[in-house]
Image (cartoon, rainbow, N blue to C red):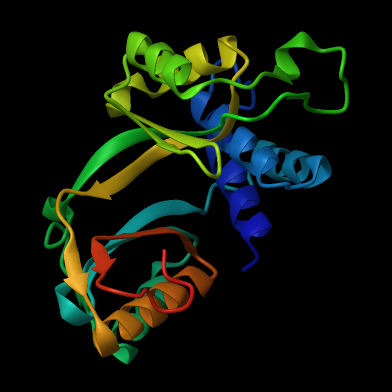
Length: 244
């Protein structure tokens, strides 16, 4: 499924808990992520409308755990209305590329849960249709200023990719709203907000194993019900095409 459709589904599922973003923070984050990815406004609105009509009631959030070539651990987060469809698809992908679907908890120990906000440090613009809306204005921010702002708001760590001028802010899961709100109050351009699983340690892979891990990752991400895939693989030497 196209990325836009997956983001719209996340909006629809979040909207089950209320369509007022002031009261439903999960919906606000889902809408922001969809907007940042370029999902059209009308597509987002249709997702909210479907939820209001009960269209999202059948969907549930499910996480599958597995191991891939070279001992790489995977966490696969899905949105599904039919586990009997989703589980066999995920299992088949693992099996096809030399991996295995595991029982709950078998891979989760290798990951920690964090709040993550990705920001565009170079964004000096006015976003949205109404450029007069001050809340939609964003400003450029230096690395030092971003670090100071984020840490004062309760973040644990800030990583900056200087060449791309992209900052990644990590915090405890319960600090997501506080840190995100501080960034937006300072008119920093927040591209992505959410709770993610990050590996506690990395599993090096190379050669054929690295290629099969990448193929498994691609296959999982292409599945209709899969929302996100996290893994602890790290490519030794040159990465295979498409490696992330």
